[in-house]
Amino acid sequence: MLAEDFILPDQNGMPHKLSEYGGKWIVLYFYPKDDTAGCTKEACSFRDNFQELASKNVVILGISADSPKSHQQFINKYILNFTLLCDESTNIIRKYNAWGKKIAYGKKVVGVQRKTYIIDPERNIVKYYKKVDTENNNHINQILKDLQQLQKK
Image (tube, rainbow, N blue to C red; front, side):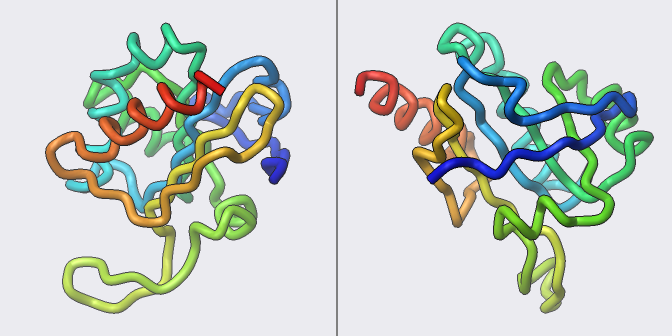
């Protein structure tokens, strides 16, 4: 399935268009909120594995409904080395099925769900992670393993 194209601003307000990343693999991940426990673990695991992913021709793009200012503070606090995109309207979050019911801090709420997509250089979605485990680098380890298999094809 072809990944839905979009244009969203990054942490500096600069627009990014998904189709402009043609020729690269993309790890597109959706997360609930900047500077919260699970989201920080997930972002830091991408940060810590950035060089390995880059060596595999992979770009990391994180998306939440937070503002550019919030993203900038999150990036600065944790020295994140990849782009965070802002979808304050949640239109793209919804198109990628990352909006819905979830449990947050023991309460049932509706909001951004943690989901990840691997998109190949032709913009095809080749892997979808519906359940993301942010503990002990489980998610990034699975992504690296899957990329190794996907890039062999």
